[in-house]
Image 1 (spheres, rainbow, N blue to C red):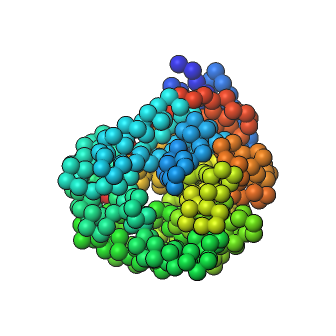
Image 2: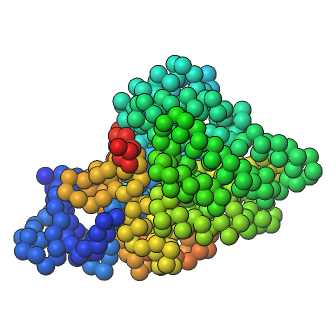
Length: 466
């Protein structure tokens, strides 16, 4: 059995920062010991990685991606192969993607379709959530079966009428079922019925540019839906996880619920922390690159999101990675913003942007690891196998150079999309070597991984619930 030793780095987890060596055996963390200890001095290994002046951190867990997702008459540009490879370049070693139930179809058929897309294609490990698009009695029964198999979270949409939308009665029934079977309901919280009225009114008035996408998806309609989702979860006696929170008014709803001790959780994404409606208003249809839902908000919303991350009223930063090329996909919506495919690329940039947030004073180093690795793993039943560096954990390890400088650009990224949402942004920090279950995927900034190394990981239930 091969052994790998990572020597000389600063090991950072959500709980600790310690100068320690890490011994890996059989794809798992075998032991950690202080650099200068007799224990570490006695270790031998087939491979020794020098992490002097580097951080040694758990691989990132991105709990919200959409590889190969059909949307708006096209399909997200990253396959499971290209998307997981890009994730690894950015220091992420596990994704949880969304399998989609078709209206009129079963959860099982949707799940099988996503297994077929991902099987033997992924460079890193992966799991699935289930999008429930058609709540009925047989589907509610299927939810129980999926929880038993390790698909323990179910996403419902309060947006997109005619596509994924569920009404309050359907959402309540799904929440009641989750309350009984241990599943976690994930809500896309926007009032889609009201938004559709505003979309029609804007287009009728000739307001067709990308920036109007943000204006019609009003922050108050995110806050209203967040409030409604929380109340429905209370009635159902179920926990709730609100995805891609972007508006300060929605954060306030989460704070109010959590102050009452309710099992309500929130996620935000790098685009809401680093981008704004200024990007949506970029001239010459450039704004279409930044069309996603929930939409980018005016810059003043960012302070509430950073504060929520510091106070643990927001627990997770995921990417909602759903890339569509500017040429040939985003431009479907020229002359009608409502036809622009919704989604941004970001799976490769999340860990680095959040490290920059540490340097900028928004987060501590341990909080960086907490929101990007440990908490998503706990939230979705993967911890301590994923999200930490401890004996017995999978050896998903990143040797991270906190001093490396880079400029984010479509010219150098590895996502299968023709633009970068953070084009030209200078940041400091970069993954140098990335191990997945002890096997190098990135080695000294070279890709040495392969499609099919990544394994499907069944998940336990949310570890923040009693």
